[in-house]
Length: 394
Ligand SMILES: Cc1cc2nc3c(=O)[nH]c(=O)nc-3n(C[C@H](O)[C@H](O)[C@H](O)COP(=O)(O)OP(=O)(O)OC[C@H]3O[C@@H](n4cnc5c(N)ncnc54)[C@H](O)[C@@H]3O)c2cc1C
Image (cartoon, rainbow, N blue to C red; front, side, top):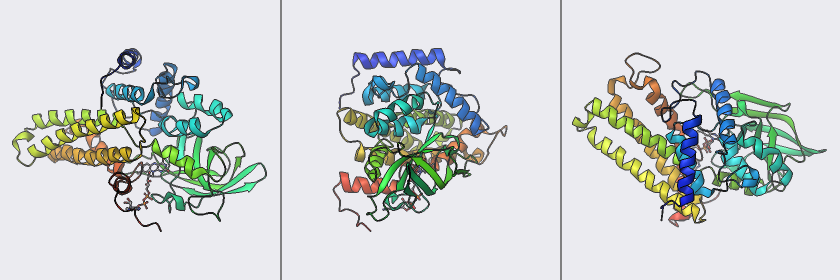
């Protein structure tokens, strides 16, 4: 692993930092003052911010230049994501489009599809959602039952999806649907693009433990999908979906920066609360410090490996497993250091952090589920990295 930056990488980081200092609508590194009360307001703000970033060519930097990127590869992506997080910029509102759908269209779409969708993904003029999980098909995705039946000029879509993040704001969704019900589970699936405003699409937000509603149930009742809204060949959607999923894990500079910032805040708070004098807390604080450093090394190893062209699959699973478990332990330690103030929420005057840490503690409970549950990551690591016997297929 050699992480010495090249001159071009140094220049990219410098250019990104100075662009951010000039354009950030808040003080560099301090982030948005309060959280938005309403998710719709946050999304509207996020669209404007992403459009500004895209105009500066800071979105999709690893994409080819012909499609609005900088051809900056995985290291360029790492550098820019890290700088955005350090500046405490909000996560891209169009991240599903930029990180998952865009690379899939680049790899498997037609020229027409690339020209139609990619520029609007970068600028957040159009937001995308991922319509994969179903009530009976989460980890075991290949048992999905949403059905797309051939009709004149396209398909008719019927079924239900769940856990669809940002579906209520999305213009488009990538949807896995069964187009050949007679085929074996992983065959006969197609990768369709759904117009989220089409007749027959119903989105019902789900209330989360944080009292927000980022994800949704989505129902399809006879939704017409025109012929040209398929990515890749008919019935070969499983292969295309795997291409999308490889982009869902892997290096995670944003989470690294967020958890490094959280660790810094924790250590400051522990100092103020004299938690280092408590023999129950001192080892946990030391452990938190060590674990974040380990996460840094995991990230560096992964980005170095990806830059050399290695497959992100199992390495991505190790990363995802490590950071999500680490995150929960780190947040638990924050709550212990907050002590009696931990159950406070909202804007109570004696609430350190204004409820920010409490919200974060609740939010990250889901981190061991999203992007594929940690049990599934353990299976991948066991089978593909450690060479353990495969789980028997049902
Ligand atoms: C915040 C959040 C956002 C999400 N956003 C999206 C989205 O936008 N689009 C989308 O399509 N999906 C999304 N998901 C779904 C997510 O990626 C998971 O794949 C999905 O939640 C897992 O399915 P399930 O919840 O139905 O659990 P199940 O698959 O029913 O699993 C239940 C439990 O059994 C365990 N289990 C299942 N199979 C095995 C096995 N073979 N070996 C060992 N243990 C096993 C699981 O780990 C879990 O603990 C999101 C989830 C969350 C929490």
